[in-house]
Image (cartoon, rainbow, N blue to C red; front, side):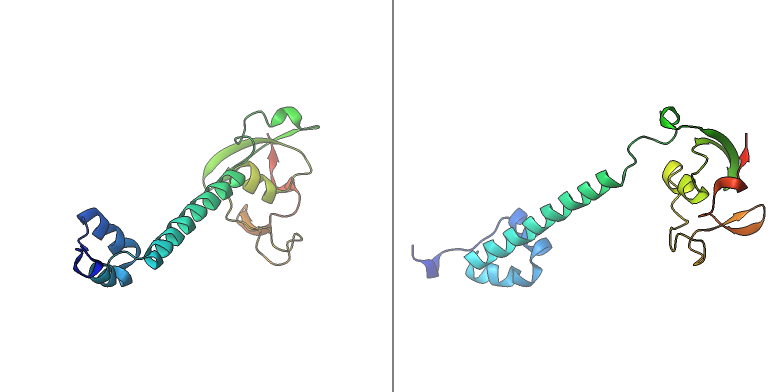
Length: 148
């Protein structure tokens, strides 16, 4: 059978694959068949997807804290201080280094990332929190926390 009389019928799974990944090429594939150009395009799409999944997985792995919040962290802290406070209406208690800022306590130890580290001096407002009903920079020391 020569190429001009060959049938280019696709299975339902193949049609669905091309519809999902290469909808603009589906009619051409149905008319002329699957060419080297289509194969290379499909492999590029698949490779890009695999690379994105790999990079996303790596980013998620690197974004995790080395130790879960509150597990074994106190053992390595010299001059540790136990502090307690209310965050979003819930009572919290932490053992922290007295030099640790409220911002770092919230972001790193409690994984509350709403306050951001902007200018690192409290002037830009990115680290602002409400403490005792007042706006306050959380990049300052933890003196606004009460010792338990």
